[in-house]
Image 1 (cartoon, rainbow over the protein chains, first blue to last red):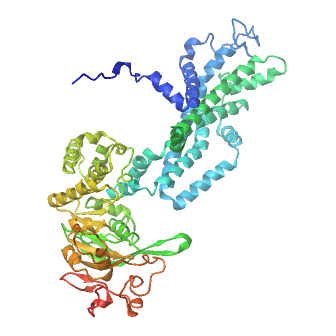
Image 2 (image 1 turned 120 degrees about the horizontal axis):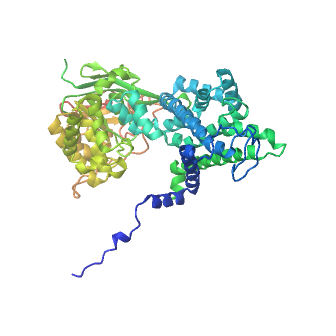
Image 3 (image 1 turned 30 degrees about the vertical axis):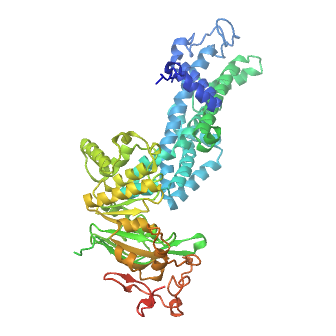
Amino acid sequence: MTAVSLPDIAAAPRFSLWNRLKGLSHRSATAVIGGIIVAIFGLLSIVAPWIVPYDPILPFTDKLLAPPSAEHWFGTDGNGMDVFSRVIYATRYAFGIAIPAVLLSLAIGVPIGLWTGYRGGWADEVTLRFSDALRVFPLIILSLAVVAAAGQSLINVVLVIGILDAPVFVRVVRAEVLQLRNSTFVEAAVATGNPVRRILFVHLMLNATKGAMAQVAVRAAWAVRITATLAFFGVGIEVPTPEWGSMIRQGAEFMATGQWWVGIFPGIALIVMVLGLNMLGDGLQDLLDPRRRASAR
Amino acid sequence: MSTDLLAVTHLSKTFRGPGGVAIHAVNDVSFAIRPGEIVALVGESGSGKSTIGRAITRLIRPSAGQVVFRDRDIAALAEDECRPLRKDLQIVFQDPWGALNPRLRVRTLIEEPLKLHGTADARARTARVEALADRVRLSRELLGRYPNELSGGQLQRVCIARAIATDPALVVLDEPTSSLDLSVRAGILRLLNTLRRETGAAMLFISHDLGTVRLISDRILVLYLGGVVEEGATRDVFERPQHPYTQALLSAHLPPDPKAKLARHLLDGEIPSAIHLPPGCAFASRCPIATERCRHERPVLMAAGAADQRAACLLVAEGKNRI
């Protein structure tokens, strides 16, 4: 018998992070680009204290509204604070509000969606009507009103965004549960003697949260946008705090007099961040939706 | 205390169909299962076999009648009260691909009934899961896999392991082999036979495959349009079927011996609609020997043929029930 030459195993492509990323970008370039943008912002928010040239709330009283220069890359604002440092620092507030708000939405929306989808009947009816009623109001107006009434604080902004956005998760989870409710494995779970609690939070939750996961980035984008909107209207976050919305508000005032840098830079940062989150969300939906994925393969 | 493990009396189930029409899936069915016995429930699709299986395991609530399991009527119990009983009353479904949570590993799936009903000790459970895997002849290597990595036969073994994990007194097997390949089917049937010897569990074997039923069951119930038309010991029913429907059914079944003489009675038409039940015998519309009386008078099960054999046919009394 002659020796059969085997293919060189070492020459086969390595299973590395880089290769995985390449494979993923083949399936959804949108998700990868969005993910990279969000990752860069995330990194900036973590290292912000070490990379910013100045304290973001330190006013240079002698340099009000200084244009961009080597000293102040994005110029200074009406209080003489360094715009570059503030734009970078604001990523902390964007993530600091969006992440807990979306987690809160999930914590409220997923259990309600599981329960109403599984139980059906009056519970389902009531929840649907309630979330529809909530949807009738434009959310921006509603959150403006609620934050204004509840009091200006970061916690209130998180609570309002998290609670008002929960119906989105109720709906996607409920829709998935409705499809699974009559499947044999749920029936088998009942037959095995699972209590309702375990059917909901083990059997259904493992199979019905794909849609919710795909929504997470999109809802985070919404949270970032609404935080900025609230601050733009002077609700939620107080002025010296480095936050894009309040910076844009101040910048708008100086736009007419030619000090464009005050508002443009935080505006660009906000747009790129929201765009990145939305791209990530869209891409995730592509990847997680079994039908879209099947056609992509 | 009766000797029956399960006694079903006057069980009926009516579903609400589209537009509110009543679909009579099961009509006034009574039968009993003794401990350790394998009873087969045969009938064509739409005859109400699976509905009976689900009513017995209280996955659906019967519209009328009693399901007495261990001297307790479970038909009327709330789901919460049923839960402890499920330890002794298990079911294996037809479709093993759909009956297992795709996101749980095989080990977790087999462990689940133990967790819910049995041992709190994790180490004891692990040992039991491995013992169960051995018992259903499932390689232990597969315990770490997910359901989509297993074949249909392997998945059905997992389902059976789950069903017998808590040593139930009765296992309902809802067409456990009909979605499997023939070669795999034999293995599962062998396994069920062995398990019955080893565990002593009674089984209700739901099937439309007469060959399978003949191999495995002690007694047989023939179902037509939601009602029992014949019951008796498997051997008696196969050798001397009394009801015309059973006779036609058995004549349609190919014997293993190719030289055997075939006396075929082909039935015309379809099983009647379960929405408008015929006033008389359910089988009268297709029965080759039906009389005018059959179309108006509803027959009840009466002794026919061998001891313990009964058929629901008016012609039995006159001895004219042979087709």
